[in-house]
Image 1 (spheres, rainbow, N blue to C red):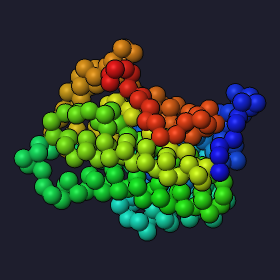
Image 2 (image 1 turned 45 degrees about the horizontal axis):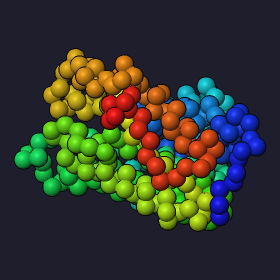
Image 3 (image 1 turned 30 degrees about the vertical axis):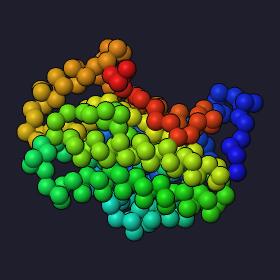
Image 4 (image 1 turned 135 degrees about the horizontal axis):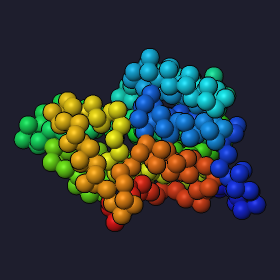
Length: 271
């Protein structure tokens, strides 16, 4: 199945996701919720999956209220294949299909290599890399069964292009793997009409990484300083919606001739 030539579509139609169904993982807050908000604004119905079920339900209610689309919030653990399968099935049964899947869930503990345990290494790879693999596989199975094609968007990181900072060996390794997974899946899934793209943000302050910094003993003011230090040619730190707009581009027909690429959404910090 080849993707359609959309040259005759208007710009409004190209960006519209009306009639499409999407899953965003780790979307109760932060980047995930920002992405879900933009997909909903473009007209997509959504399943919001997150390990924090109560927050996922609240996020779904908020998004539905703002944009008038169907949004389901539910518990989801991307390290548990059964949980991922249940969310994918819920999109099909409750929303009527699945055309967009965003692998956003991720963790980024900062632990020096000499202090890192096998268990922590395995946990980071299980969430960031295996979680993206399982999500992509289950989405692709349902898209293939329906014969609709679709789009899988993997949230990578600038850490998928380079070393990042001391203490992030597991995170950097996991994101390099997701970037490679994106390229490989684009090749494997193209015959089914499924495009696979990556989005690589630089450091964007969110509830999640602020909490992670606090757990690592990094004061909030130091985190703000880090964000300013990582400001690139754009001249300001990123915000979640900066990343969400790029994810929307990937999910929409604006990017219909793209697959396998990972787009840097980093304010030029990787230039």
